[in-house]
Length: 282
Ligand code: ATR
Image 1 (cartoon, rainbow, N blue to C red):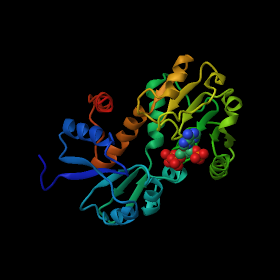
Image 2 (cartoon, protein in one colour):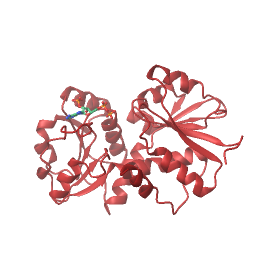
Image 3 (cartoon, rainbow, N blue to C red):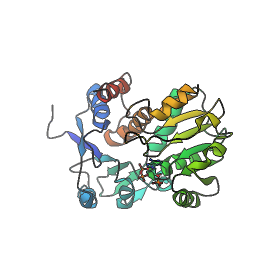
Image 4 (cartoon, rainbow, N blue to C red):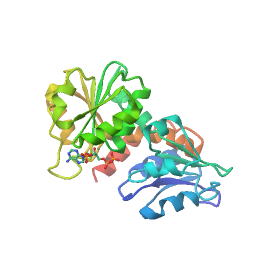
């Protein structure tokens, strides 16, 4: 039951109506018996900063996850930020402390690595180079998470090479930039390939990269999860490569987010992935 004591948290993005985050968090809240609710907010782009500023003190909203297109703005709006959020250049979590401070964190990296760990037994991100496709916010977050996990080299390939170069010069010498057209060369010796581009979101716009040039042991991951098995992952599976899906990353980033928002880890025994899949499949 919603009461005067109900803790309110949520996710902020634009658009937000198809977010799966409320499904995950509310299932955990119900199972844990926490008097809380997790809803979705879609402020107008020009209102995001005012929305965040209005939450100082946490008297209205305890905290929010943040998604496209507000993650960079969320980092800028905070008074303090974790090292991993600063390296990612983005925040997916804002906590409105009772002392008035706004604290930013980024759990996307934990989510990315947690998804690999969950779906590929024994995967070690420090065991060799990883290729990241794309050079937007999602790609930067992935590259930052890999660096923190000890990946010796991150090869960032993008359609617009200058954006990959900018990302590489920002993150340091372990990140090297290239064009999507150079994929075959970059795939050689890679332990994983991660799609962090928006390609494939619109029909007929799939990524055309030679996944067959990866070692047979390479793992292929897609951060996009609608559908769960994207054309990119289907291509990898047809080649016999092990794959990791973006839905697992969503679930894994939600776990530490839940703890930061509601003060307790998610309860065990709730199959939130199955719930999310049900919604995904309509
Ligand atoms: P996000 O914050 O989700 O990463 P973004 O910053 O808009 O989103 O970045 C989108 C990424 O997808 C970019 O790397 C973009 O390539 P460009 O920098 O060349 O635009 C990439 N992208 C989008 N559509 C693509 C397509 N059809 N083929 C290849 N890359 C594509």
